[in-house]
Length: 283
Ligand code: ADP
Image: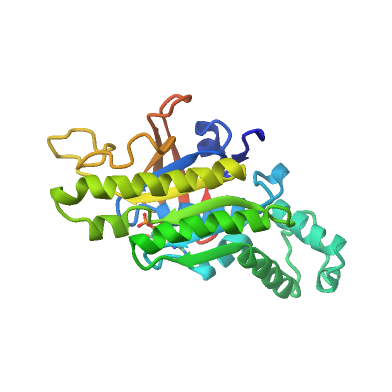
């Protein structure tokens, strides 16, 4: 069994709270209200997973199962261009070593602070490389979503010996189709059974390929409710114990978000802050 890897958000405070980053071989559930930043979080991880380990990644590719049409290639582009200058310079140097002619035209400054004109084109090529390594599949309903997770397994098998094996399986949103299709108490058991099987498939990919799995789950926070604790999803915790790490995201002032680690099996509960900016998740 491979050593557990850590996929960093690259926000030091958050990574520290997570014990160094999101673990491979397990499922992390990010939950929060609509607009809290779950998709942004997932997009950022699809970028970060591709980075070399010394920069917090796993140097692997991502599979992104998109159920609500939230995947935005433009957002990936912004996040790649928004990486730290030092990381960008290293990535371009790597391309240069691989004989990419256009990179040779660019003077790689200390940390790309003074970007020469030609860099734009070179960065666009780099963005394309990142986009090629995010394998996006759209799920039209819950059965299709289940099928795509099964196919993710085949894809991960196929890519295992490639230059960029699968290091992240992201499902955004895990629960939307299931909630919409299995309505009412009478369907709860059935829904739970399907979701359990689905989570099992996801965990299998994560375990077999030493990949991180991230799933999002929209909840309504209701601070005034009789349930008291707004970090506990109203209506119960539908994922139960299958998700090993649970991260609650909530809006704060302006672009700030509070990230809370909830009920972790081996880490203390904690809170940390990040910002969602044009350039991606930042301290
Ligand atoms: P969720 O998936 O939890 O419903 P999202 O991840 O879609 O929420 O987050 C949407 C929020 O992310 C927006 O309200 C905005 O605050 C922020 N956001 C999205 N795109 C950008 C961007 N290009 N620049 C800055 N902030 C952005």
